[in-house]
Length: 162
Image 1 (cartoon, rainbow, N blue to C red):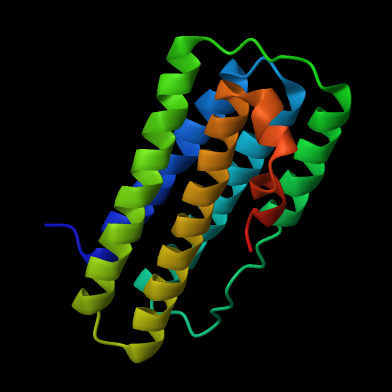
Image 2 (image 1 turned 180 degrees about the vertical axis):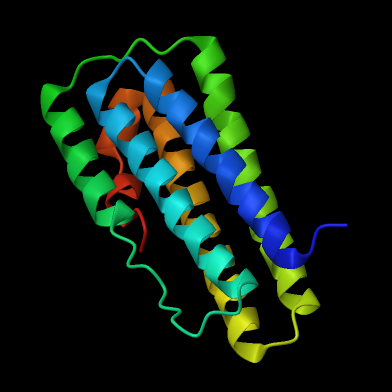
């Protein structure tokens, strides 16, 4: 039976692999960059849970820059303003990514109740919030690829990560 930390580490590893696959399959450089950044975020989470599992005292929450960077990338993509040809299969993958971030959020809330150390509990809850932000970012990507023109004209885009 996996403990909360092992479970979280597996989840983050799977997430990293999934985002690397999405990055490799993305035919647009901006999306490739965003998926690579998300993969790197999952690596940071993995390392954090690994430290928790080893009961390390040297625990600092990694700084999350992905939203600021993603906003900049979207703005650059907006300047090019081309219709991105994203296949239905890609769109399905993006939907799956949204669902997996949602599941991760729920799981981390659950796992936070399973750990006894209050500091560890707080970290599980913080990472849960980050997964929610990832979901928000992915929903924006989904909207962007499904309706690029309307999406870029809407104010939603400017609220990423707020």
